Image 1: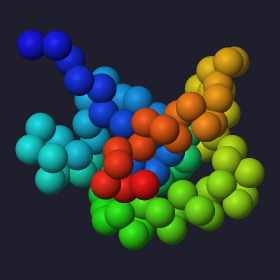
Image 2: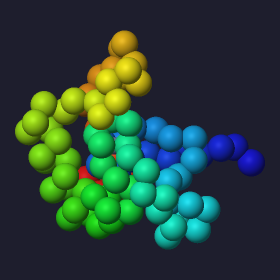
Image 3: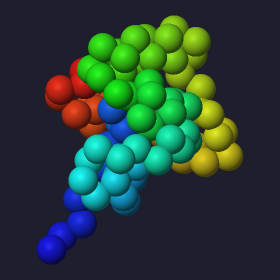
Image 4: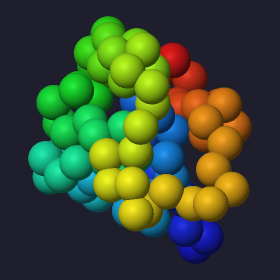
Length: 87
Ligand SMILES: [Zn+2]
């Protein structure tokens, strides 16, 4: 079975494993390395994801963990990976 990446509902960063657990309903409350959203809180609903995304973008879209930012990072390309339901 090919591994499906999981994409942050706020910023679209890809993860090897979903922080929402195998059942999709058990968030681990870790922090997105890019947008800083707490999984299970700011990404709980489409509205909360949109609200946090707007704040993050307005604040300059800085990486929460800057040392994990890829050198060739492109914000707009990553934002396109946000699941449609949460855009
Ligand atoms: Zn994120």
